[in-house]
Image (cartoon, rainbow, N blue to C red; front, side, top):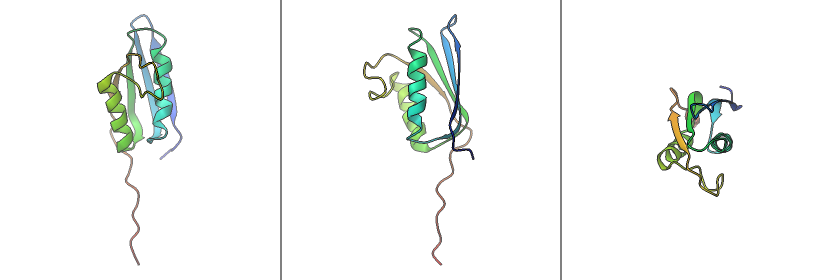
Length: 107
């Protein structure tokens, strides 16, 4: 598994759509990078439909819940976007989730 986050953005201003494609491992810490990219894309045009494709990423459960919350509220976290501009985000969920931390067996 590659822990480095790779983000690609595709924007179609004529149709008011943007797609953010993320690969790698998305954690509760690295999800902030996605939020910053989403905020930048959202600022390009009012009413932009933003699709977040994380289908090829390893996503921690907590990070996935954070992304879903943004999708439901139509706002990015206040620490990322203090003005709370409307943000229409749809999340293409991952096919796989990050593996649970390995547990050690007592010898």
